[in-house]
Length: 240
Image (cartoon, rainbow, N blue to C red):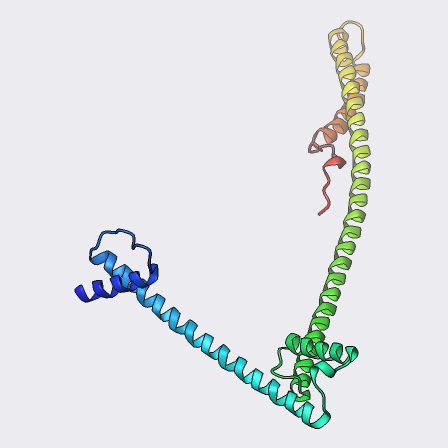
């Protein structure tokens, strides 16, 4: 505990430098948390230091390689960056920028070709994927169009059938109303005939009326036995 307190206090002093360390309650829990923060901070600092050293080493290597190439140009071709023409300087700048974009270590052909081949393969794969997506999109559009056409044809057929069925239902209703009115009329006449038959109407006429009424009643009964038909409403038809 005391050893951890000393380490934490020393670390806090280094972190805040000349500024005063904020007051806090020193107990086992706070010391444990600060100790964990200290260890994490020190590990991060070590990793950062190693990364900085690696960058410094690579920078030194690049500078040495650049100096070496510059010496070769000056000794072999008597060329220096200051002696290059505007066009040559521009081409050299393009070459360097291309190397940075491609992510190659140097500007040699052995570095350029693999990088260019890799980008070319990525481009070909992207174009292949794009063509596949276009084919799938076209197939979906055609399928949607066919489905819409089919649904429109089905809707037209349904509306036509509903109109025809409505005509049949209306005609059936008219026939039923007519037969019912006719039956009521004949029933009234039959009742009147039954009342007056004993005094004014011969039995032969009564029998004739019964024979005339019975077929009408049977026909009306055939209509009455039909199940009710609901008038279709074409406005409620939906296209799936």
